[in-house]
Length: 216
Ligand code: AP5
Ligand code: ZN
Image (cartoon, rainbow, N blue to C red):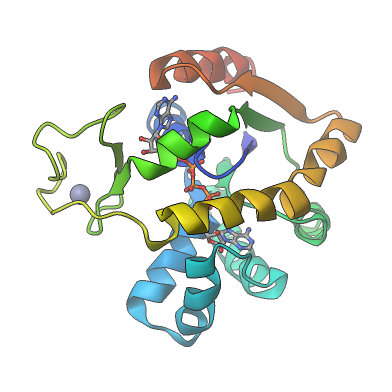
């Protein structure tokens, strides 16, 4: 089962991807996580991407496609994968289609998490992330047992650079201009499945579960 999780910044793609990984046993391919790992490692790719990400812009299609191409060919993706944060532009979607075609694969579902703008700002401003194991939290909606400390590994939680208020607005603008046209792209191909992403994390897990059960 090959799935794309689609939606604006802060819609809950990463949160729900973690759930699908645990529940359906297929790996998550998050281009945001891969890019943040490159930034942390200060690799040439990471150095090139950092200022773009901090400003809330999109890294070049070429860089992102290189990352996805390598990851999707790994053995653990053989029986399925969840794409989170990719594709984000029409050229990325076209390149994904030819990549999968070459591998004899296809996308089964594009799950769109539809969330109101005001809710998105609330979610991003309260998001905290573990810099060691990557687990995501929210100060109010999905708080760790001890404030500021990761439940899994005990590290101090941090706020992402691009979750500052001024950057969030730019990320939302970039989403509207460059990524939201993909809704039509996937609708036309009969792949789009809409989920009301405004509910609780558990509500949305339930909706995703019902949707995917038939194809798991
Ligand atoms: P990326 O990491 O992909 O960021 P994003 O798309 O902006 O998505 P987020 O990670 O912000 O949100 P999410 O939907 O995963 O929400 P989450 O589950 O964390 O990309 C970062 C940057 O990398 C981009 O700006 C770009 O520069 C670059 N990049 C990445 N991919 C690229 C590509 N393909 N092309 C070019 N550039 C690329 O949830 C948010 C918060 O809400 C959390 O605190 C969570 O606990 C909480 N929450 C989640 N669900 C709920 C709920 N139902 N109710 C209440 N709270 C909830
Ligand atoms: Zn952790």
